[in-house]
Length: 275
Image 1 (cartoon, rainbow, N blue to C red):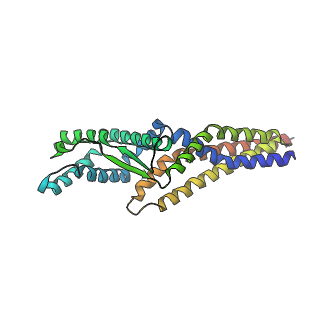
Image 2 (cartoon, helix red, strand yellow):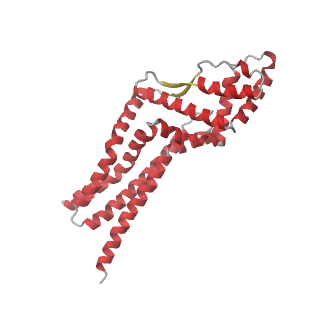
Image 3 (cartoon, rainbow, N blue to C red):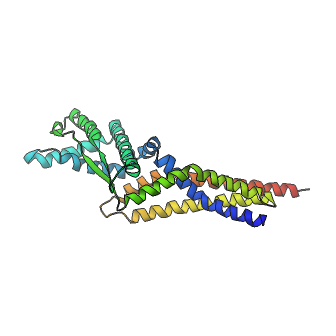
């Protein structure tokens, strides 16, 4: 019975590894503004993401300028100016500010917000861009109104269900990793042959890390396949990879720890048999 109980606990540990990682990630990575912004910050230099930002910003700002018959030329100049602006430190600062605003709007929608959409106010970002364009002498840039321009960044058919799911992950992010470690320790404690249990638990952790890696890859494929045709897949893939970098790193760390524990237990047994 002790052996069976130990085996059951090890199986639970393997299954809880990906669940614990996702719960912790949702609570401490997605739920923290500084960590979320830090994860997204490197994307400011990603060519695909930058191209999407420049295109969308050009459309948004061009619609704010009334240049009459000079509109096509102004739009072209504005696009060139924004492409140049995307190589500056000011752009990276604006990118971080926009992501921090998006994160705040997302959390507000998942905690206290109403409705089925998440929108952010780009007024602070537009103000910074306008200042740079005016300083560079872009025609009609001074006509860009710095008013509240709300942009919808997410729309969901049932945001209430997503809100409940995210709240559950936040709660689980506190105790689920601890529970996994407790079960791993219990699996070794109740076993008849503890060295073998350590080796099996290490392999269970390794299996759990592989399951986590598979889950991240499968969700990536499903997410990209489900995108509307007008969404840039390269940019979306870069964003997904940036957001899930913590999960992939966790998978490698757990795999290394599990294999190291299993190897150490195996070597200990070999050394004991050596005369």
